Length: 626
Ligand code: KIV
Image 1 (cartoon, rainbow, N blue to C red):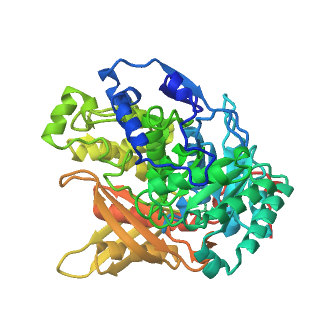
Image 2 (image 1 turned 30 degrees about the vertical axis):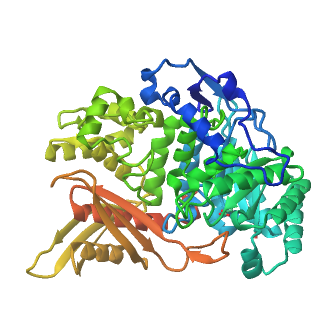
Image 3 (image 1 turned 90 degrees about the horizontal axis):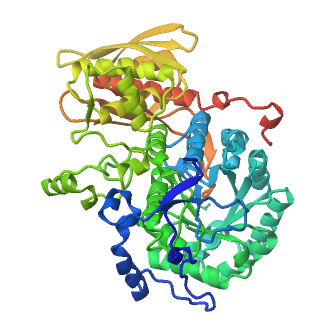
């Protein structure tokens, strides 16, 4: 199945209608998911929920399935009124999460994975933040933004900029190499931001927004998104005015951010409905949502926004982002997939949901931001059934307790105990299982995993999916190797000082050995590594988890470090210059080895963060604007 197609139920005549939206004529058009109208639709649809959720599909007559096509990309118009564009901002808003620094190579890997998923727009970063950010956005525009699949799909590559000429020029310099480049510019519109942050009047802000959108268009960019930051708390009449003005100046998408995540779903839906009803020229542009998660409502608000007429939603993988994060792609997409036809009036997306698990895992490992086990859709427990009653129900019919088939998001279920392989399993069995889990490894990666799998299988009777996933993460989602861990030996206990001897190799193979003492074996080993690497490093966080139960569990370690002052970037929203922090993860049955791997991984990430980790494209195209 091509990534640009989506397997969803046949569109009935009812679902082909434009979703019933609030009246557009009044300035206080009523949108309320809690209104009797909403309840009525909800109740009526409850009985047919099973039809769109394949886990329970065989409980009712199945609708015939059809492919709905991703409509042609036109910046300010979507030919299919029910299509919702997915704008992924994992690499921009997501990377602003504390500790989530990504190297350029990691960003490119994630962008490639987002394209596999079929997202419509990739917000690749904030090019004015630093020269590394600029270069990463540019490389994504050059590579991912020019990889057109057989159906003609290629993601739009977008760069964020504040409303000033320098930021906008820098964003354009970075994205212009993509087949479909977009500039996203924003300025705050709420009273509190105008008074305390911008210290500007409403008229001044309108003038800046209008002239900067026009400036972006004048550079040759035909796809310009404008965001009134903190729209959720902005004066409505002012919003209608500024949005009307930027439409006249050439904006093609109007994004409505609930920057501080304060609105409730009914309120946010009403905001979108009111903007749709009252903004002059709104019929010529796309309305978008951007919901932060401060009250845990980002997914609900995003869905309320699209029900009210937004046709672009801004989301991140695993819901990562500033503070409490953003609306999560997997939640919004699966909610639309499961309920779009019946509850949301026929909405659909172009996402190939089978890549969700893999993308989530990649983002989790690269950012070092671990998922809570009960995270919807992608958490470790999302498809686990613990209680006897539930297990009994599951054995009788999966639809009793599951609304989504794990296979739909790229997760193959193993047998009930999750035990898949043992020490007699061969390379083929391992490869098959890895494929079922969504991993496509090359020969070398498979080889490395195989020997590690064998070592684990020698010591453990039961090698579970969780063990295998931990090994793959440890092997595959690792930064470029600057220093390679060869050996580590520790002594510790109550009789004396903990000591560690560590052997590392440089990329050219040259070996280095150092010994150190410490307050414990991990501290001693980290100090020995510092002696070899000779880079000032501060350890900010250290945590360890057992992946599976029992004394022979695989332990995964996560560390967060900060180097000296060389690695900083500007936060788009606050303008603050922040020092980057780097995460590293390691896995192993020995907790000291797992800890040492995590530390070496974080150090490698820090050292590989600079430009040298970028794949080289053309020399002409790699100039960084002053
Ligand atoms: O949260 C926010 O307001 C933003 C905008 C730049 C879209 O991230």
